[in-house]
Length: 307
Ligand code: CP
Ligand code: NVA
Image (cartoon, rainbow, N blue to C red; front, top):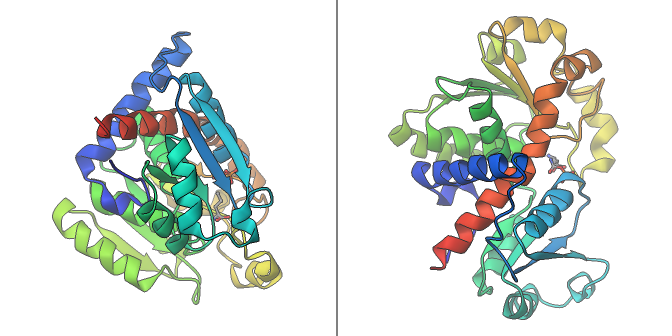
């Protein structure tokens, strides 16, 4: 049995296997074919933070695979009133077939997984957002831009950045990360990524100049400047991130026909301009839809590992 907590725990081959299943599942859905690969299975979804895409994609995906999903907000279950994580994990995993968790501390999901008898999926923690990266990579493949990709991430050194680091390090593409001073990626995670990159050949560069990161990039991406849980810092961050908005002038520095990705929700006029969102609307909303297909691929893959 395997959990899906970070991409760090997965080989390149395994990540590509999940993407291949997702591609097949997406094609089936477009052809009106529903294979009940998770019939009679239940997915418990624990949300300690808000969500639009993660909730809708997991719940819809589970239904389309013949299973059922339970939405469990921490306001409704005893976890939010202090029942221990380990006890919650034992109880839920004794009744459900998979668990998806969106929470704050990454250690919470690790503790849950250690006490769970069924696969646990990270639906976002303060440290990582790996299911988003499956959808992002699926999008790169669909648009034929995954080969020799040079990805520029401009913005906050956060859970998305850490997941981009792991994906690049595992799959071997070039990643440049530009953050304002004081908002750099976690030092331990970057060290791990550098170590993994030695085997894959990935070139990873971190810097504070967005223009340098964008120069010749084939894919440009960003994320909100204030993640969930950082609402109080929003005003300060808007000041500190001055010069980091991905706008038309910035995109001009990237390669001709460079693609733009955004995990959403997007804050137009902050990390990205309205103009860039409009120009790249097709790929960005396809990226969002790909959450559904990628996670169905992931759940089918995790189910197969149980034998
Ligand atoms: N990108 C993403 O995870 O969106 P939600 O927060 O809406 O789930
Ligand atoms: N970094 C963002 C991602 C949202 C999908 C957050 O954690 O809020």
